[in-house]
Amino acid sequence: MSQQPKPQQQQNAKPATAITPTRQADFPEWYQQVIAAADMAENSEVRGCMVIKPWGYGIWELIQAQLDVRIKATGHKNAYFPMFIPLSYLEKEAKHVEGFAKECAVVTHHRLEAGPDGKLVPTGKLAEPLVVRPTSETIIGAAYSRWVQSYRDLPILINQWANVVRWELRPRLFLRTAEFLWQEGHTAHETAEEAVIETEKMLREYEAFAKEHLALPVLTGEKSENERFPGALRTLCIEAMVQDRKAVQAGTSHFLGQNFAKAYEIKFLGREKKLEHAWTTSWGVSTRLIGTMIMAHSDDDGLVLPPRVAPTQIVIIPVIPKDDQKDAVLDACYKLAAELRAQTYAGEPVRVEVDNRDTGGSSKGWEWIKKGVPLRAEIGPRDLAAGTAFVGRRDKGVKEKSGIPLADLVAHIGTTLTEIQAALYARAEANLREHTRKIDTKEEFYAFFTPQNPDKPEIHGGFALTHFAGDTALEEKLKEDLKVTIRCIPFEENPEGGTCPFTGQPSKQRVVFAKSY
Image (cartoon, rainbow, N blue to C red):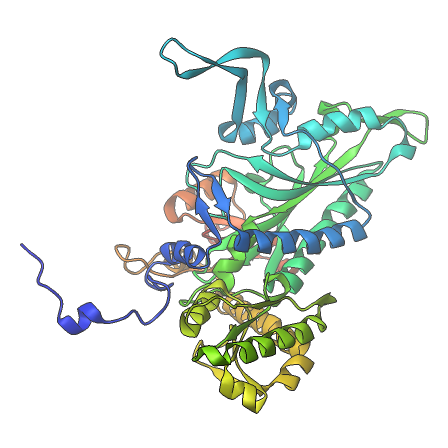
C-alpha cells in the first residue's frame, strides 16, 4: 500500500527546533545530532574511534587545564608512561587481566612488507605481544617497583594525561569510544590509611570539579563488588543523571590495596627495618565528561555550555545591512571585544570572539546557538547609534534577547556568566531531585524502570534509592530483566536500615539503581 503524500503545509513546514529529533522523541539520536550541529566531533574510518574537531577539543583543553591545576594543588606531578604494555604484565594480576581481556587491542608485529600481490602484510613477529594501554596500573607498577626502595621514597603522587584504547562493542561519541583521552592518577603509599585518604580525597576533587566547572550535580559513593574496578579493593565514584534520567559514571577513584604492589614487587624497607609492600591507588576522568555535560545541559536547539568550559564565552555578531556601514560596525565590535577581554570571569580573561564572516547575521546567530556559546551580542548601525547591543543568553529561550548598554554589558560580564553557570547547575540539580525516588517494593521498582510503551522511545525511570541485601547473582538478574545496575552505594544515604524488597532480608543501606550509558 503506497503512502499518501502529506498536505503541502506539512511538507513545507520548518521544524520547530534546530535539532531533530527532539530529546523526547529520540534521546540517543538527539545526542548525536547535537554533536554534529555544534561541529564537535565525528566518527573516523576506524570503527569506534572519533575525530575531535576544534570546538570539541577546545572544551577538552579547558577541562584538562582547569582540572590539572586542581590535581597539582593536591601535591601531584605529571609524568608520562608508555602506551605499549607487555602482555606478561597484565597476566600478573588475575582480576585485572580478566576485567580488561575482552577490550584489549594487541600488537603482534613490528614491520610491514609487500606481499606477492603487492599488498602490505605484517612481518617481524614480536617476541612478546604488546597490549595498547587500556589503563596503566601494570606499566606504572613496574616503574614504581624500580623507584621505591625505602619508606622515605613514599608517597609517590603521579598523574598522567594520555590516551587509552578499549575495544568498545557499542561506541558512542565521547561517552564510549575505542580510543579516548583521559587523566589517570597513580599513587603509592606507606600505609593503607594514607592510600584510603588519597582515594577519598581525589573523589572529592572530581565531585567539586563536576559541580563548579561543569555545572553537574553528582552523587558520590562506592561501587558494589560487581561493579568494582578489576583488581581494586574499593572503587569510589561520582554518578551524574542526564536528561533522559540515565546515569553516567563521570569519574572513579580506586583503593587498590596491595594487590598491584605484590604483583609488580613494589616493596620498601619500612621504619621497622622490615620489607613491606606499598599501598596503591588509581583514579581518573575522561572525555566522557564532555558527553555527560552535553546530555545534562543541552536542549532541542543544540549544545548548551557552562561558561567555565566554553571555548568562547561571548560571541559578538556584526549586523551590517549596507557596505558603507561595515567599517563603523566592525570597529565598534572590535572595541567591545577588547573591553570584554580586559574583564575576568573565574580568575581568567573573558573569552571573546568577533564573528566577522561575510554571511547573514541570522544564520551566524543560529550557528553559535547550536555551538552552545553562553552569550551572543549582536551589533548593527541602530545599536551602534544607541550605544547598545542586542544580547541573548544560551540558558534562556533563543528568542529571549534584549538591548543592553555596552557599558553595562562590559561592567557586568563576570556577573552574567556567573548567573548562567549557576542557572545550568540549578536546572540539572532539579532534574536529579525530581527523578530520584525512594522505592521499597519489588513491584514499584519494576514499574519504575519499565516503559509504558516499549515500542516507542520513551524517557522513563531515574535513580531508585532501594534497599539491597542481595548478591552478584541478583544484581545480574536485575540487569537482565531491566537493564539496571547498582550505580553506587551513596555516602550520604546510609544511616537508614530497612528491608531488601527482592530478598526480604535486612538491609543496612539504600543503594542507587539506574539504567546507564
